[in-house]
Length: 215
Length: 391
Image 1 (cartoon, rainbow over the protein chains, first blue to last red):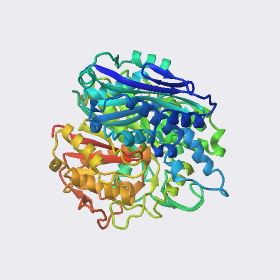
Image 2: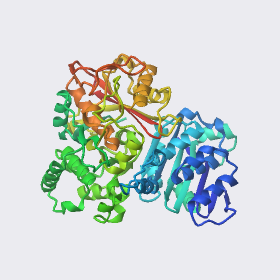
Image 3: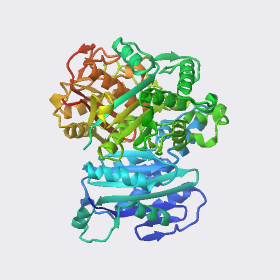
Image 4: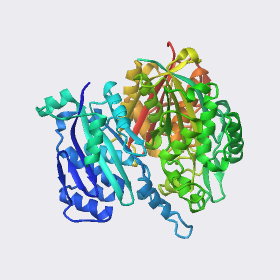
């Protein structure tokens, strides 16, 4: 089965890239919080839950948001759309925040709204809620972006007919170091039927490495 | 498509070290959940299921000697020792399997070495030990696995995702063997978080019971050895179906309808070629929080599984988080092998909206297969079918 990447999006401190277009942020920021907030506004997104998310989920959510904007919704059944993401730091950024709340017994204030984000797959949940996706889920950890790991996991899902479409990629954040690349993968024949054109990136380790390095 | 057999296993919980000792406790309805009054897990006393640290040290030293390793036990964290003991015991009958080019190591954990964030422990280990990829590398290097481990961190379904991923990779022909190990420890980090959700019970939890008032947390590790070569192993049980789904509803609350868990169960059964009436028993997630168990009962109804005997093991050793899927799968498989149902721990009277068939006493009956499920934060659900070979 030939698989293609119909759309991709990546966010780094240098800006945002959606398919062939890259945009620099209007302002320069040295920290993540104002950077992602400004990007959210520039993209004209209206989703109040965004403000409740932790930084990792904000990064993953926004990457998915801009990518899905250009994806034809007729491409796949949401119940058969999977989400397979990976990173290196898991939820460590928010883990530190939760640990701060229990640092000493005189100021002990662990909070459910922080604690819930101490799992990396919460970001998958946020993306699924937003786009009503109910298919296969997996969150994988690797030291570096590992195109072979994602290629194998995702092609396996398609070959065994568990998914009709799959969002995959890398969303990693620790303090103010961050990087994302999300890709929407579908079988080539489906892409042709839904979009009526025929030039997409093949879903391969080589393509993924190229896209990761250019975003 | 190659068939994937279970070739070996090992379980560590508060109930003991080894699959048999845990299984005996389940049949004798012994719980390992105790009051922990000393303030190490929470400023106030808390009910939890902890692995005996003295026995762990002994087991680790013994495993180390038997494996011919000469390393400083102090250079391994509590969780790494759990993983190492469990993997060593599960694979000790097949020493050649570890260094086989066709063996994949799959690890599942939600929080890894999260206790290293505590000020007192931070400086005892290199700073990169907090990363799950480094924890995995320590385990890979200890044993000498050839391939980098596949690491799953998917909340409370992690253990099931680890097993089903290994099985699928083997069915695809990419590996002939897999060692799947799940582990998580109880630390103040995790206990304080669940406490802030007000989801902890003061007593051993009571899944599906009318008096259930929250979950019990536990720590543990478990390993399942999988192989596509039944001839070299006493392969009797194989993995024949699996699925994961997402609720797409809420990040910390379960689905209102149970539809998405039912979807995972139905997809796993359909892959296994089984109809709901053919299932021997279901080992559910059963955390004993009011909403989770309610959702599970609705999912069982939607999947037409109301008549199938169902249990939860969490009343015996609590919710072992990233280990839970592997711990509970191993024990379910042994229940299947022995043709003997395990009583659902802590259950007395049905307290969920759908009339599910909770197992209220241990019972011998011919079993051909079982269905294992899990659900977790982030809205994730997973289901796996284990089946006796040739049935």
